[in-house]
Each structure stands twice: as C-alpha cells, then as structure tokens.
Length: 358
Image: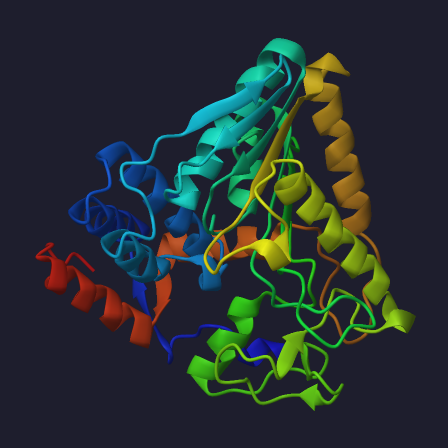
C-alpha cells in the first residue's frame, strides 16, 4: 500500500531539473526575493524533487510566494547572529524564507568546523525549511559530517497521547563515503511526514494503517481532509510495543535543540508556518585521515548491502539509496511534478507575469 502514495507517469508531468530551477527562482524573485536568496531557495526545492522527496519539492514555491506577498515572511530577510562562540552560534532567521536561513546556518556551522573542528548553529525566528537533509548534505562537499533538524507545528501525538502536541520534527544526517554512495539519513520522527497524507488525499489513494489515528484511537486509512483536532499522526514506532516512546523521545530531542536552545519555542508554542532549526558540521580530519574514514564507510555500506534480504524484498538498502536511485532517474528522464501542482505552478507564473518555462 505505501507504494500507492507516490508519483508515477500517470499522475505527474516530467520536467528537466534546470527548467524547474529557473521557474522556481523566477517566482521567488517576482515577489521581491533577492536573486541570491531566490537561487538558494530554488536549489533546495529542486533538490528535494530530484531526490524523490516530492512533498517538500518545487510546488511549495506556490505557498511560499503567497506567504511573502501576504507579509507572513519578511523580505528581504535580515539574518543576525544573536550570540556566538568559536564553535556555536545562535542566529535569527529574520522571519524570512526558512530555506535561506537554514542554508546560512549550515554555512556558518561549516565555517566554524573548518576553523575549530566542530560547528553548531541554532536558528530561531524561522519558517519551513523544506527537505531537512539538504543542509546536512552541504557538509559532504567539505569532507565533513553534517546534521540538521527542524521543528514544526503540532501534527503528532506523544506516546500514549490522544492529541497532536509535537511537530513531525525531522532529522537529517550525512556522512561521506568513498566509492559507495554517501550515507544520507532523512527521517521524520513521526511514522510518516504529514505531507505524505496530503499527497495521498490529492492522489485519491488510501494511507496504510498505522500512519494516523483518530483521537479516540481508531485507525485511519482514508486520508483526512486537512488538519483537524479529530485525528493525529503517530510517533515513529506507532505503539509502545513497537517503540513509539523512542520516536516520541527523538521528537522532543529535536524540540530541545531547535526550539528550547534557541529560545524560539517548542512545537506546541509555534504559530502555523513557524519552524526552528539546528545545524551541525564535524570536520572528520580532526579525528582521522579522511581517506581512511571513507574507506571504512565503504566497507560498512558494502557489508550492509550484502545482507541476505527477506523473501519479499529485493535487496537491503542503506539510508540515501532510494534518493540516489531517484536522482539518477530524474536527472536523466526529467523530474516528476504532480499534475495538479504542475498546472498550479504554471498558473502562478502567469499570475505574476513571469515567463513560463516548464
């Protein structure tokens, strides 16, 4: 059943990644976003679509651009360092585009790691950052380990709870390999990202049991029609016997590092659209030779790939494999954009007087 909640050649239109970059950047610029910030925001969204994280991809420019027009985001945004040490910084995202502030936060973390071996930045006054692993992956080109996470407004119940009190609070982690693909973990601390439920609703397909429940504990398989106090996502693990307390604990950890540490607020204190973010970079060379590190990463990944698979499965995967497979396909054959959202993007460009290039 989970395979039904994805794009295919029937429900989507394929577009070259370069054209998506041009279109998304042009829309951002037309509503007043400085060109350099528009290019960054577009790269983050296109990267998500290329990697198959479609819920966090290019179509989000529609909502972001309307938020800018409506004054929800402050443009141009002023990203200030509130406090700082050699290895840490507390940064304000300036109430602007979250994609841009998270990108700057990881740039600062990388700069600090290059000088001191480690860099950590907690970001307040922010908004939705899209695919959280993007920022962790920024560390890879510097031969560093990257980690990123972000909060969100409540959509997930705590273990044993009957009401949404936590965001999906995703975590990204990236470590470079040598000959093998880099290890890239991108996970919500809920059983599923809330965007997957919305995608299932738009595609008209059911959701698997275990993703969401009513506040009385009943299973939900028909995607709910938007947010409501009558239903909630499950924490990672779903039920106590399958580790819901662990997903719950990870979610609270994200709230602490992103929201409490920054002072920006934890999930249940956030207004709709607010997100607090945390980034970290580790310079591997401060611990050991980078080539030796990558060689051991290769060994570990190969050992995991060589694990005998269950009869119902084709192979054992490592975090980042599905996204790397999607990238190979989509860069060669075009990036799928959900048909309805494809038309909405074109209409938004026409509405703004921007050239339609997709």
